[in-house]
Length: 246
Image 1 (cartoon, rainbow, N blue to C red):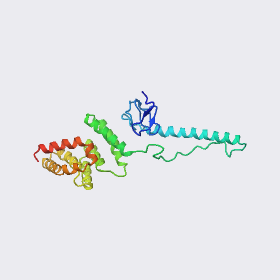
Image 2: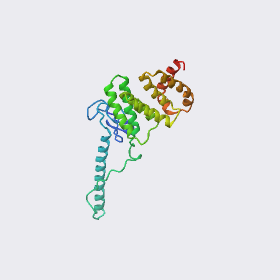
Image 3: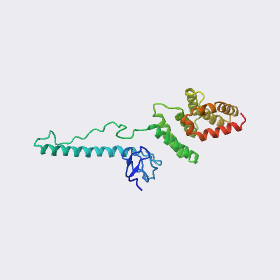
Image 4: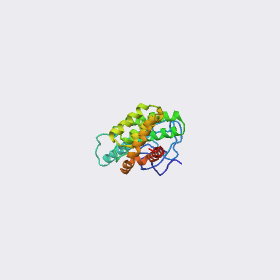
């Protein structure tokens, strides 16, 4: 199965082959061209060796443009000879690749790639593969660092990634920044709890539970999309907070 006549799960266009002609993402059953690992449909990077699959797109588009330009030049020459005139030049011009636009190709989405690396790191960490978790977390942190701005959800992800590396100061720094953005945001409390629990500071953990329960209903009522994406974490934390009797 090589994805003939399929829809790319990354950019949504109709394409064929093993890789999307528009964004370079892997289609069903595609192997990594670098290490031959089986890729997930829609992947822009190999989960095994982190090979950038988007490079296939740029090379393919370049040669397609060269071919199209050459054919256009031949057509112009034939038309000029047919009309009895001499063409200005018999050498077709190879066009310079234009800037990528929404109409021509799927735009580069660095936030989505950062989130994909985050998911990969979390799955590896939960599965006990610490080496893979640290490798993926490093890629994720680099991807988040390349973004122009970070919302509360991205900063929560960064805090969880720093937990894999055991950097408590970095976790608290993200919690502080989230709280500055939104004073009652629940993610700041979740990050603080992870540091306080690791330190064995029961009084600060109890205070975090108390403040979480105080703000929970009001924050959930706001319908923040990041709460929906991390509902399992929030509900588990709420159960622990309630079980303390706070």
